[in-house]
Amino acid sequence: MLLRVEQCTAYRELLRGKIPTGRIPDKCLRISRNAKNQPIGTRTAAIADLEDLFMAHDSSLTGVERFLAPDDIIVSKTDTAGRITYANPIFLQIAGYTEEELLSKAHNIVRHPRMPRCVFKFLWDTIQGGDEVFAYVLNRAKNGDHYWVFAHVTPTRNSRGHICGYHSSRRAPDRAAIAAITPLYDMLLAEEAKHRTPREQWEASLQLLVKALQQRGLAYEEFIFTLSGAAV
Ligand SMILES: Cc1cc2nc3c(=O)[nH]c(=O)nc-3n(C[C@H](O)[C@H](O)[C@H](O)COP(=O)(O)O)c2cc1C
Image (cartoon, rainbow, N blue to C red; front, top):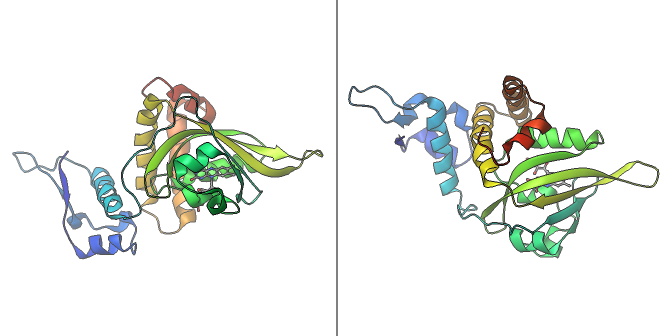
């Protein structure tokens, strides 16, 4: 689908991070038309395209993907607030940081803007509730490259059984799973873009995620385990 964004005021404001994509007026989204002058694309698709363009202008992102080797495992540990207390050599290598740069930093240091907020909300609710969680996560390396992982995050407990931190191991994801989850994440991000505050954003996208799971008749974890090796 061919979509073009006009260099309008709203677009320039978007680039400066002043307005969320959801508030870009329709007139700023130029959608290609067929021979009968009927629009081919939707507003949602046009906004997704705009976001891609926006990312291309984000000098902190290169658009270059890094890949984990099949046997690589990225390991990190955090305190209860999500500050990194341990990072293994593979983590340092793929994310491009030194140990000193990561230790005691919030784990969102590797957060990529194309990750929906509701995924992290769900992740935190689950681990703070004492359970483990699996998720496909897109991360950002220090130089702006990106890498996908299949993450397993668990609470760490002390000898009295109290949660004293969190632990995550990540492996190379199945590419079919990434192909399957990307449209869902795009849909969640498009929903988040319609809202102003982070809280409003994750509340709205979490509702959409719950609906998407209900439509498939699957719990979150079941859904995650259906993705590997199969397109949804
Ligand atoms: C053990 C552990 C590992 C995490 N790993 C990642 C990660 O690899 N990438 C990431 O973006 N967030 C990760 N998070 C979640 C971050 O703490 C944070 O919630 C997320 O990056 C969203 O950041 P934000 O709330 O500032 O937008 C991890 C959290 C924990 C507890």
